[in-house]
Length: 95
Image (tube, rainbow, N blue to C red; front, side, top):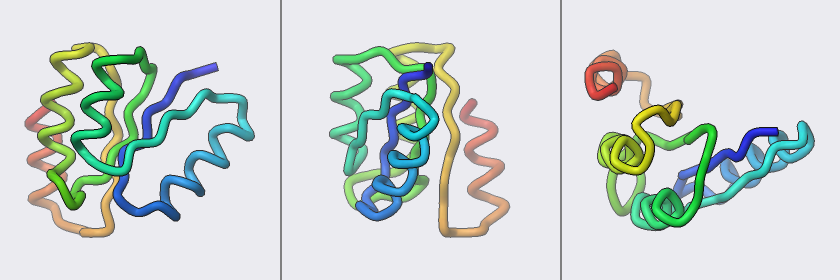
């Protein structure tokens, strides 16, 4: 199954996503912020990155840039509690 990196500063969100994905047989690595996720991207190989758009130590767009350096083909899915069209457009433009 897939190796998935979850980056979110909300521990409950990470736990829920991780539990669901592990139940389906996926390997999951959790990161509580942008810097931790960047370290995980450097040290590991992933099939998918699930990232919160806004975290305490940065944002999902900076993590997207780091993921493109680590693996330009890595699919990235943004999660956010902020329903803003501008954020969606910015994420799409960034790749």
